[in-house]
Amino acid sequence: MNSLSTYKAFRVEEKDGEFISTIREILFDSLATGELLIKVQYSSLNYKDALSASGNKGVTRNYPHTPGIDAVGTIVSSKSSKFKVEEAVIVTSYDLGMNTNGGFGQFIKVPEDWAVKLPENLSMKEAMIIGTAGLTAGMSVLRLTETVKPEDGVIVVSGATGGVGSLSVAILNKLGYEVSAITGKETEIEFLKKLGADNIILRKDFEEIDKKPLLKPTFAGAIDTVGGVILDNIIKSISPMGVVTCCGNVASPKLDLTVFPFILRGISLIGIDSQNYPMKYREVVWSKLANEWKTDSLAETCTEISLSELDEKIDLMLKGKLKGRTVVKMEI
Image 1 (cartoon, rainbow, N blue to C red):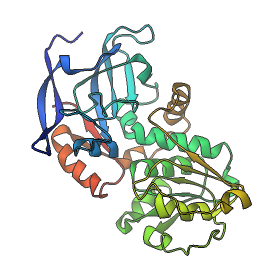
Image 2: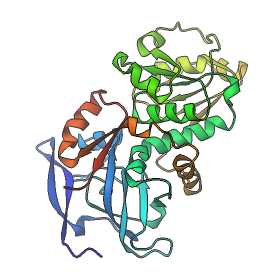
Image 3: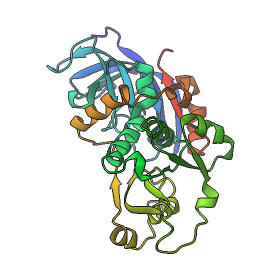
């Protein structure tokens, strides 16, 4: 058990209607109840973290608060029969970093049901390069590949320079799929090609596709991370019996569609909810991410920062100017 009374954290406070973040000393008493006390070695920056840090009450109800929906570290105290002191564990999603103090602090306390043992073939840093974004990508790939095989045709990935999109491109490439990547960032074409994208589609061109109920069947399947018009046009462009997974709505939560793609082409639309994904499937996906899905380009998707650099990266993320994954090293 840690003998200190305080730990350091990236803390967000509400003052006169504004949300201000600082690195502060926090009492251990502020931690939630749970069977596991974990010393955090790495966290990572996700869109939900940026929303929480900017005061989005749909993500975090009460402040002051420590964001960070991802964490990996070592157990320093355990009241669980499943986990032992000094074991390395990953904690992602559930309520971590939303209304429970999260991974942007040196310590977290969580229920045992939130933790997954760190796979042997994965370092702590690699686990956070993957993080919730990679877990979401893995869930999407798992559901997609249950039906669509490499020989069936091209898979299209939207938001391809983002965390989920970039890791999806890399995993699909490793599994032998031909991948088309949709991006709004013309400067990142080489980045996407290094990850394994075979074709690059500029977002401005894809959004201009006409509004017919069905479009030319171009893709065997898709992983969509943005929603809105992009998802509309993806669905209308899927070949018969194809599969689309969707996990984001940063463009829009609305769809403007007929039922024709689903009835006339028999396609499937599968929603991916990484926050409450059942643990037995999480363990399967983490195992695959650490082994047969582990990509050589994992480091290519990552920028490592310290807590003191978080404010700048949060601002860039909210402006849509980050690419790949941002990993936070907790040494201060």
